[in-house]
Image (cartoon, rainbow, N blue to C red; front, side, top):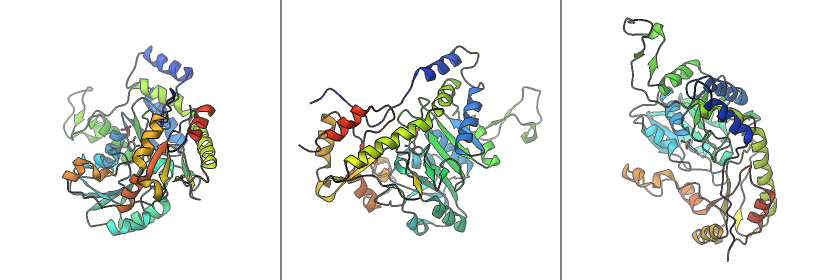
Amino acid sequence: MSSRFIPYGKQFINNEDIKEVVNVLKSDFITQGEKISQFEKKLAEYCGAQYAVVFNSGTSALHGAYFSLGLSENDEFITTPITFVATSNAGLYLGAKPVFLDIESDTGNIDVKEIEEKITEKTKLISVVHYSGHPVDMEKVKQIANKHGLKIVEDACHALGAKYKGEKIGSCKYSNATVFSFHPVKHITTGEGGAVLTNDKEIYEKLLMFRNHRITKNSNKFLNKPDGDWYYEMQFLGYNYRMTDIQASLGISQLKKLDSFVKRRREIAKIYNEAFKDNPYFDTPVEKDYAFHSYHLYPIRLKDEYKEKKKEIFEYLRKGGIGVQVHYIPVYRQPFYQKLGYKKGLCPNAEDFYEREISLPIYPAMSDEDIDFVINLQFLN
Ligand SMILES: *Cc1c(COP(=O)(O)O)cnc(C)c1O
């Protein structure tokens, strides 16, 4: 038994970050100042997109992205069950119905080959998740979406810093909008936070309004005659999904370190891949030729002989000081989704993936000793 405990992921915050946040705390504006638009500009630049709109979480950013693409009541959207519940919940907020697509057993991403089978007259958009930081084969998704007139959202909450065919995730080259999260376990953090990137000005403007109660101060858009210079209008129901300047300043500072964070994650993955190459228990993550993996997670998959022992292995690793986690329980297996009528067996590969998957620790602040500790722990009693 060891006193060391290595979580599966955590933030990296240094004095430079802290200084930036303190500066904002001492300034006149702790929210709705200039840090928000600075962070948005830098984020858009980094990803190679025209616009970024930051939100107070990845979940609210997803809500905004789906809304701005017109997802609404009685629409269907195609997505993956191997994700955090927010990916499909955000569509439910708008009254739309998630249609779960099965996954590829190696990457854990949606099986692009099966998208067309799920398309109906009600399908409005496809929401893909770059699971663990490995991009989905977006060119193929885009071909299908174009053919059927569907919109594409990339839930890239795992994939900031990843690339698809040499292009940064977030460039929106193959999608209408891309969503990121800045939760502490993600690539960069603002405490809580998220963003939507897009190249479409109309979507951009909808996002800005959606984030701020759908209030407009643009006199060209007013329905009523303005009472004076103070006048603003709320024509539709919106939300307060704003990020603070305190958070944005942390985001700006974190973004400077993003490339080094991704580099370290990839280094750790390489060391793991090498160390676990011939192990009898599990398969290691793959990286397809079109992918530059950003390793938000390092998901291993137990081989047939050990699948039945997952619970035991998980407990053993936890007791040994390795903070393993499981990503994910297929979303439609949640009681809330069961009540909506989704049945066990809907996506057999996803259920099989869930029975095998364990996420090992991977984060930039991991020391070489931490890595050795993970590698050297016996896998089973
Ligand atoms: C983290 C995450 C979200 C939600 O982000 P929050 O910032 O926690 O709201 C959505 N989708 C995926 C795939 C995530 O990993």
